[in-house]
Image (cartoon, rainbow, N blue to C red; front, top):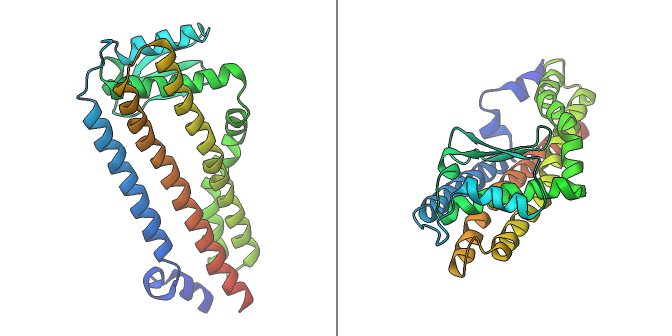
Length: 241
């Protein structure tokens, strides 16, 4: 019962947890990265490309230049909700990208095309990422219930350890995501230059947009790593008491 009170105390996170600062740092990193990508995208959304192509038109040209004709391009609601669905072979562009002819919109569309090209070429990190999605989702879903269950039943180190291992699967997924996203951006910049969709300073501006977007993945991975480290330090210390 004392173990439960120790962990479950509403003041535990702030007064009994010497590693709570890791959560705060992770949150700050994530918020800062989100603000950065939104402000950068907003800035370059006001810069019209010299080609006058929309995000959808540019995406179609990029896919065809790569010999990809079996991927559909669809509009999806929201802002910066763009993504490539490898299972259904659909590239979805958000409202702020699909019809926009800005440098930012074309850069984001090209980035998603980069994922389609990865899929076509059998890019190994993308295959690995797709393969571990179910396991990572399961780990993220079960991790905290297992940890809390271990606390409630008297500090069961076995359940807590299993919960931490489950959480680590989600962290591994985020780490695998990093090279996939960076590679997609590199492919995007190269193809935009090779096809002449963007010119000169437009390429520089696109790099800034994609660089800001990449920071969100880095920040998310860093926040998860800090949380995992916190759990290991916190419950590892308790297991040795």
